[in-house]
Amino acid sequence: MAPVRAVLLDLDGTLVDSLPDIAGAVNILLEEDGRETLSLDEVRAMVGHGIATLVKRALAARGGVPESGELALLVSRMMEIYGANLTSGTRLLPGARELLSRLAASGVALALVTNKPEAMSRRILAHFGLETLVPVVVGGDTCKTRKPDPEMLRHAMTLLKAEPGETVMVGDSAADIDAAHAAGVRSIVLSGGYGHGRAEDLGADVLVTGLEEAGEAIAAWQGAETEHASLSPS
Image 1 (cartoon, rainbow, N blue to C red):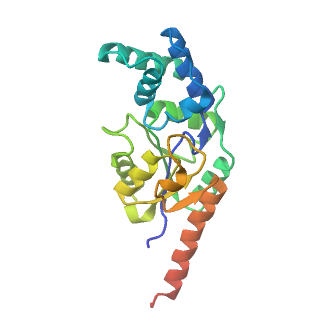
Image 2: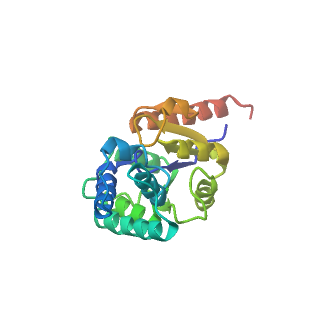
Image 3: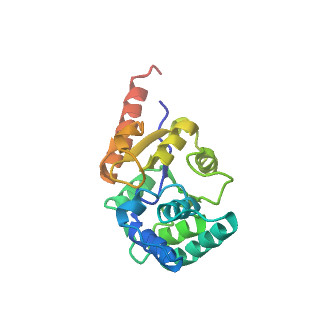
């Protein structure tokens, strides 16, 4: 097993709790379109595959998805609403800053790999002063496809000059773990994140309940690799 040289991290539900701002924007959109609003838990289950998919799921749950032309306008309006309230209620999850600082200090290369648009993702990182710790950002509009397709992860690894065997994906949803499997990288899943299904059923290499545990898992891999190297014949 190669040393961990790169860690790719999801954003929503992994590094930040953005649900209040996302749900708020969705409900403004629904109200403007004359539809009933959704609860936080309902929106939570819809997050993870990008804003366009989120809008489709919200509309489907409240009366149906319109024709493509009208849908495109509603997606564009959602981007406007959410972009104006990107960090009003969004908070860093416990241990996020500490994990990023520790990994960066240890020489591990970091990248954000999220289905949220790249510009919005960079604004959130900058809002929390994390842009220097995570210099590489691959958003949902950076590549031609989004997670669970592995293209975004492969693009991030190219930018970080890391191989799949040296890379770990940390996320909270099936999109993250399925993309990790397809890209051939190790994976850590956080329980209690966004999306459907139970975290323990997603097939990640490691299941954790928080970011401190994620850091411990990466350190354990590093420790095992160091021990293996010391026992290998010279």
